Each structure stands twice: as C-alpha cells, then as structure tokens.
Length: 69
Image 1 (cartoon, rainbow, N blue to C red):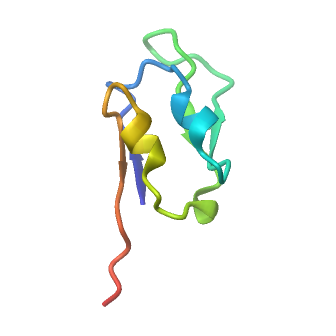
Image 2: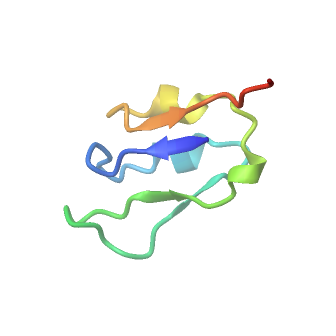
Image 3: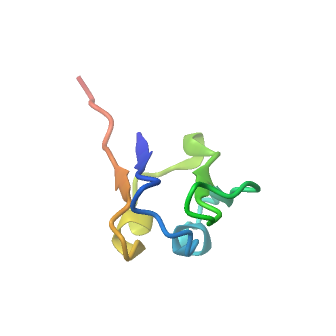
C-alpha cells in the first residue's frame, strides 16, 4: 500500500521521475497549496522498492509491505 501525505508533499515530482515502474503520474489539478501533487495511479506495478519514499525530500510517501500471512 502506498500512502501519500498531501499535507507534506510540495509537488516536486521526484517520486514520479525516479519510479522505474511508472507508478506515479502528475496530477492535473492543483491542491489547496497550489501544487500538482503526484497521484499513485498504477499501484499494481509497485515492487515495493521504496525508491519513492527514500527520494522524497519531505517524507510524504510511505510504502508498506503486504502481509504474507
């Protein structure tokens, strides 16, 4: 599961640029801060590599491992 905290995100789109699986896409609408927050659209492609959360300068992305129970 990918959690994007829109209150922390400043719309730099580093996650969009560094995701090799193209999970994120830039939003077409401005948020309340006036930025285009990335949208995790293709979540099924996510390999849980966590590059997006590591590269995010605002720690706005959390990638949770699926429970294997």
